[in-house]
Image (cartoon, rainbow, N blue to C red; front, side, top):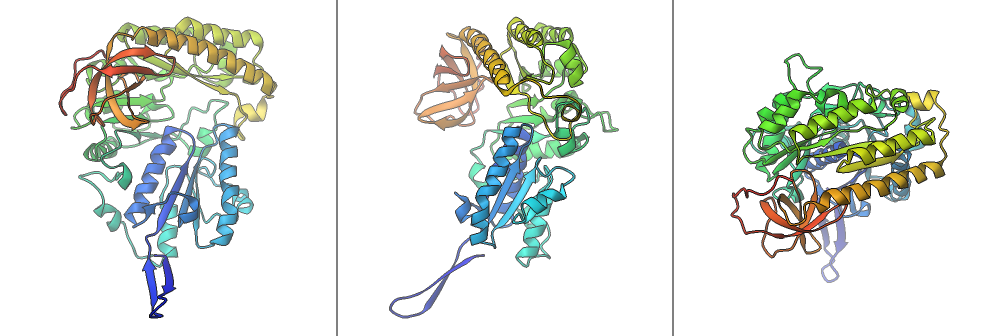
Length: 471
């Protein structure tokens, strides 16, 4: 451990103060990166490290990066550049570059560009960092026993100390990588081919999280509803949900992101049958124009997506649907964009995650298509859809005013409790009690496009599950 030394002014004796090693994790991008960073932090704490408030006081700095869009990649480069002078002043500090900027097949040019980075780690892989630390501090013989001693119950997923008993919602990866290869997407090149994790390992993770206070788990995959397609035991996402329903302590399960082609009736049946499965669906459409969808290699048409929305709503009339849309894909004309806007207005979805097309190195779109929609036009189209969706969401949420909704309380923010409904709507309310991790009924008094504000309907006991609206 680092030592700070100084001599006593009266006795002249040398005092040596041993301070704990510290770490800092910077995270950008998706929920998968959030889950990966949680694993990294917990692993470092298992080796005796403690969280640092700034890179200046950290002995290990981990940059968990995203390159889905150019803006995310630029942020990663900005982080790296900001660390260079600090690394020059403190060469003993360990810098770990992790995630999609590194990818499953590291580019040697990355090492040449950033020679002061000590460790390059692929996505979801903490081992390169741990092995480096074990070698660097003379503990090469240290095995995984120290990490195992910090495990709770039968799971290996130990939350960072500051989150134990406080974190209410957590993400659990169940499918790593992707093999679909949409023409715009860099994920298959950076996270590798699709790999489903064994159901036993996932259940172990969920049980461990439940033992640490987690009450809501979101199952993650680039195409989450393809879970089990690469396994030989017949596993499916529906079957996994049924298995996890038996885990004591977890009140809710979500899953994202789905692909329209793999949203089966079996999966919808499971959501309908299981009290813990939330009736909220994240299903990207990406475009409302069939020609653009074909060029994206999405594998469905706009009418196919309409029929999927109808299937979901026929089973879950009070459920919610979120989607993703890319504007300015190569060759997208004004007429094609208007078809996307028309589809969004027609379907009246709860949420639309919007993105401006950004060429990603190595993808089919970047190699074979011309990025011919100007940045100004992408921005204009983005704003058109943003305004349209704000109106749609405001109208949907306004229908909840006066209703009681079931809220799982996650945290206290600026004097108000914050939580989410089963349909993933953000709700705020004020009360002096402690409601972290509890299900409470909240009567909605105000609704905006992005959140709701209400008042606590009653003061339920710790284990009471109020009979509020599922919205």
